Length: 480
Image (cartoon, rainbow, N blue to C red; front, side, top):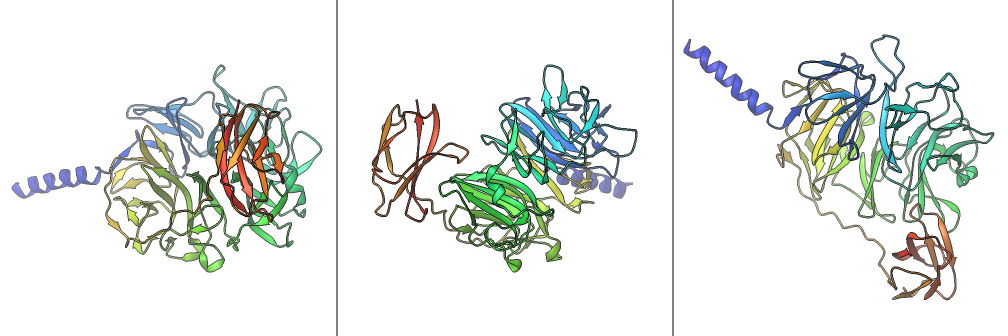
């Protein structure tokens, strides 16, 4: 009897120990075989949003019919507006892939079918939340079939405009393109991609701006060589495409973020096949920043980092990998600036972890997981372990990103003109761009004094370039 009591006490103790790093969110998703594929910490609604192929979300005492979109308020799950997915009573719904905010509106994108009551047709999976009618609305002026080639809307991080990407198709007009810009009302082809050689296999994914250049990931023919590439960039100052130095791989980019003027990428790229690093890397626009020895899968060709998220000044990465900087990990690791560390927790039944999100100063992870350390989680979990780690790799020295210097710009804010002091010796051009990286002014003479009286009020970037377009210095100003 005494031995049995000791075993019970040990089991209770171990259960508390195992659960101290992760917390379940209700009882998670249902049924088995479905997934939570994406998470989004929405500060406007003050909810953690979950998207995926699930039908129900489970609370302690009730079941919520969600159909691929649910919201967590910190205590319980609920549906979000009228169901975004069409459902005929099957065991799965079509996937919601991610959420984003643009001009204060909430968007969802994925492979789901969305009903347009005016056209009376099921259309491609993009939706914008109407908070008045509590319904997901179709966002364009035309109805499109659900097998439409352009099926992505992004990027997920804030920018001055969105992009429709995917395979070449039309979008409410006669023009066919792989990339359309979207200002919240109208979509139009993104002109620079017209320079890319046309091919039915051209595919575009993420489109984003950095240092006055627009980067395009995917798999498409290079306008420079005619060969396939998975990432290039368009220089708005020279209006020319250029290769990204050091990027010589077909490996896919799965996610990105920009922090402190530095780009952070993760994906399926590897150094062995022409990538700048293994599965995760930083880039300051001029040089690549390796994070130790990167990440690796037990079968290298199957490795992929699917999502990255900054949380408390550390870069957390999830995906399909089992090694980080030489230490074993379980599809989740964090980089603290000098070394990789493994947070506590064993994720069972998870071929990969698909997404991370920060909400209310907490980190959340989702994917094919069913338990963590034997505790049921059913697709999503909250990290409550603070700074706890099980093991860290050997610390390495990582050079700080070498950004171009800043010239002195005055006055700032600007009404009519500004002056530049401390111009580099080889300065030959000054380019002023908006926040999307689109040039609004280009000067090749009298660089010390720049007239901007005709510009609309707002925030602008200033780049000082040499004769070949190399960036020498940068600054910014507010136009009143």
